[in-house]
Length: 233
Image (tube, rainbow, N blue to C red; front, side):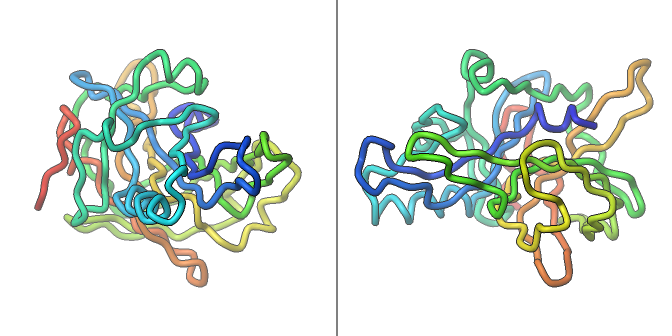
């Protein structure tokens, strides 16, 4: 399931490393999908609002994916505070720089998650972020397989069990993870077995979680139309 990692990336807010005292202020996740009609990235509305708020305090703050600065305000396709989702444009050339791939979905929208369904996802928790130098930061990734605890028309819920997690790179052990900040915007995938070659299919986006109960709330990806426009209710 390492393929999950090619469909998601860390995003972060940082000033230029050439500025004295520059640092990363926060990080989150974005996910990349190809609906067959459009290719775009997805993250949470609260991630973008967090950047907007920080930028008022730090006007030179950049929104970055990897080492690439993204003019996020001029990339947005659609945003919904109600669903806590934002879609924005990313080019194939930029994806090559990120070393990432759009997850192609044969039928859009995918069917919503159901109770007890096995799901997979990869992420970059902020707690595992390490600033190596003013010009270099390391984001350690983890890969997870879980089961849908409950599903409703608005969202579905998963409960984290660290025994199902795998460390992919970096010095930290998964057992050390105590805070799930940074996973906002992470795509949740199912393994679709109805095609000759089994494929990963995006079915949701993490938008809220609790560190004590290990619960994550996930918005159904079906609230996003194939052109990237988010349904407003």
